Length: 83
Image 1 (cartoon, helix red, strand yellow):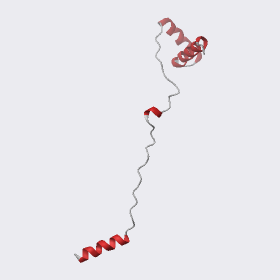
Image 2 (cartoon, helix red, strand yellow):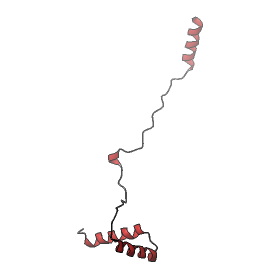
Image 3 (spheres, one colour):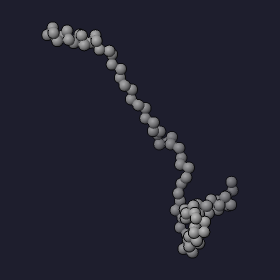
Image 4 (spheres, one colour):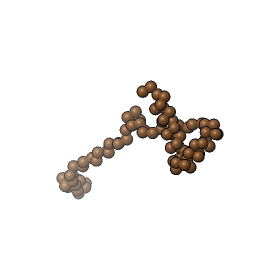
């Protein structure tokens, strides 16, 4: 018993106090604090004759259908909105 106690005492005097590692602070923001996206998508249904016109514009301009549709919607809103 004395041998075990002396080993235990030696171990206590030579050991340095333990420093507990701090847990990393999560960097994820709560849902209510997340910034809004800069863009949103909208599905637009149009008659086929307008779709074919849009497809011809796509060939002429080299833009995608999505870019052309977005440009049309943005121009419409700019023209007819009150502010």
